[in-house]
Length: 141
Image (tube, rainbow, N blue to C red; front, side):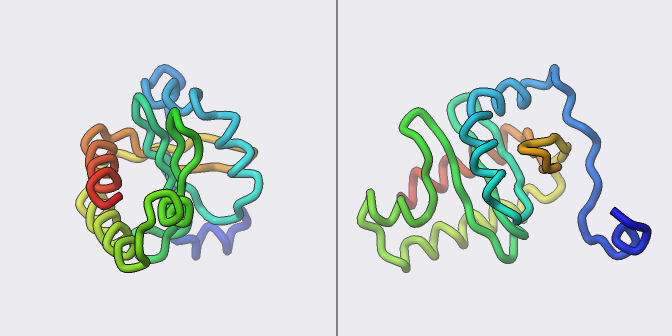
């Protein structure tokens, strides 16, 4: 990034994620799918890893974002959730609003950086944030 880019960048720099951090091992479980996905997306990515899933905020949460996640059943996002569960757009909006509120509640959680598909991404290894995201998706879906 050039001098002007770094001066005007809104992206906060985070310390690198330690490879010994449990979040690193959690990310590795989904590395292949994540690499393929990250290679196709130009937006900012923020990873929230759990023991059984990897949640990814896409874009600029909490304002404008999408989400994708992987678990034992495969890849999911808002669109696939609508199809699989027969959810209305109103229900998806409730999901999005709840995730936005959760993101704001956890804005002060520690964040780190790592590289995926040659891109720097943010990692939030917060157990509380991950549990909140899982609960929201489970309840709304």
